[in-house]
Structure formats: structure tokens, C-alpha cells
Image (cartoon, rainbow, N blue to C red; front, side):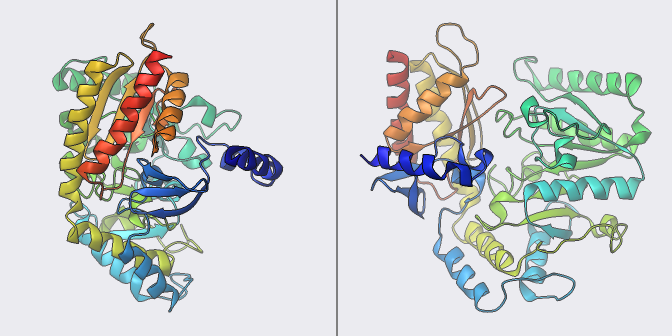
Length: 431
């Protein structure tokens, strides 16, 4: 009866929301969130292994986050920063300077990851006075036209949109193509050599942008030496290195940022998602030296750095520190990987398990053909949801199960979620 009522309501109101907002999987109707759980309209409790797609890193409605919302609402609801100035944005900038890598200590606040990417691209071009940007095939950087010009996780995102042609792409690291990190580095060098010899001179390139861990494109973790080689190539040619840390930031990889995980300091970072645990906030981050070359009027915002969102971000940073969530991400991620490797031995449909911190990708293949199995993933996700756990998907063909629980997740909750996944796999392979 519940599902019929929900479907009826959804069909009745479906023309009020654009399909791009209203039709994603699994369209679970919820009435409340708390910690690692959603509470459904059907009265059930669902373990959330999506964190709102890597956003609620300190869990849903953490008490300190709720307190920060109330505190902020008691004083200021809107900036605009620059026209007025307020404590929360200044304190947040100072806190970020303490946790960002290297000399990154100056920040432009926006509203989202896509805005952070747009700012990063504009900053790089303005500072270098060079026209081109190089990105990696499979990376996702956002859906506005500038960000879309460097996004290639799925061709359907670019269909009919003709994002500007001032970009070039080379392949992201593929674990199926090279057996060792040194082979991966050698291939990367050849890819860049081919690019420089046949398509664009390095002195024309403003920036190289990448996700240090491939996100929506399939949760692929490159070797440290591969990422470090990109830094070296940038240094050799005066090219700025941009890290898209929208998904990998704020503890997701077990460090504050993936830059620290890979021991690489980029010139520019794009931050969002986990920064404010659900409130809209994005940041373009760089050194003061770079930012000073980006004068007033060349970039601006009305809503960026919202005082309420800044209060929440300060609370998020406090919670990550106080509750030891960086270490918990490492420990729980390693534990989940171990359990998933055991599942891989039992179920033919699991092709690969990739993990860094609590950023876990489970690549699925058709157990009969070995081909990527996006349709099978949707079935498995539905079965897991029936068992009370919400996962999400990624990969070019939707062939990867994305497991990204809040950094507060416990061993017992990992076990709970993987029990649901095991039952889903058993049902899928038995069907």
C-alpha cells in the first residue's frame, strides 16, 4: 500500500520537478536523517552508505552541526561577503589555512563544487595568461559549461552542449593497463609526450586538472608515483596543477585531503561537498601569491561564503578533529576492504574492490560474460535497499557500486551494511 501511495504522489507531482532532479536512483522517500541512517516514509530505518554522495562526512544532523545552524541563524543569514564582512567567513579561512597542504592559504568562497572548479579554471587562466587546460578522461568536474569542458566521465553529460574547445584530455590511470606503478608512470609520460608533440605546446597550457582519486568515473585509486609525476611535469613547464578535491576532501581518504595522501601540493584546489555537511558551500583555494593576481571584479559572488554555511563548516572541522575521524576513516575503510575481498571470493560478479579511506568502489561484472554490468548493479542496489542499506553507483557504464558511509561509521555498521550487500549478491547471482 505504501509503495502504491508513493508512486501515485510521485506521478501526480512529477511534472513539478525537472526529471534531472526527480528521477535518480532509488528515489527513496524519507522523513528524517540521523547519524548514519535515513528514516523512510514507510517507517523503516535505512543505513546510508552514500553520505548524500560524499557530503555528510560527519554524519547526518550531527549535534554540533545542528547547533552551528541555530547559532548562525541567530545572527546572520546572508552576506554578501565583501559588501559586508563577518566573523564566520574570516574564522573559516583561517581554519582552512591550517589544514590545506603546502602554501595554500587564500580562499574564494562559492556555493558548490562546480563553482569551485569554475573559479579554479578562471584563476589559472588569468594568472598564466594561457588559453588551454588539460584534463583526464573519466574525471568529473561539474556540469556548468566551463566545468563540463574538462568533465569526461560520461559522454551524455556533454551531449548537445558543445563545451568550449580550449581543453585537451589524456587517459586517467587504468589498473587494467599497467601492472606496476612504474609502468603507469611510463605510460603517463608517453601520453603527455604525444599530447605535446601532436596537439598543444606546453607553454600554451594554463593548468592540468584532475581528481586525485577518480570519483564518479569509477572510484579508481592511482599510484602515488603517478600523481607525483603530474606535479613534476607541471613544474617543468610552468603549468599550474589543480586538484579537484570536491569528493576526496575533508577526511574522505583518511587525511584532510587527498593531496596529503599522495604527498603532492597542487597550486589550486577545488573544495565542496563535505566542507559544510549538507549546506551549500564551495571553495577555490590557492596561495595568497596567486590570489593577489586575481583582481577585484574578475570574479565575484552574491551568495558564496554564506555565513550560516561557514558556521557549519567550522563545526565540521571541529568534529573531524575531536572525534578522530581521519583515523576512523583509515581503520573502517581497511576493515571494509578486507570484508569485501572475502565477498569477492564468494561471488563471481565482484570483479574488483578499490579503497582509499572510506572511499570504496566495488566493480561489478556480469558473472557469465565478465562484461561491465550496470543493469546488474541497479538490481543489486535494489536488493540491498530491500535489506535496509542504501548504496549508490558510479563508473562509465554504472558498473561500480559506490560505498561512501559517513566518517563516523562504526565496525558494527560496516558489518550491517555488508550483510545487506551479501544478501543482495546472493539473490542476484541466484536469480
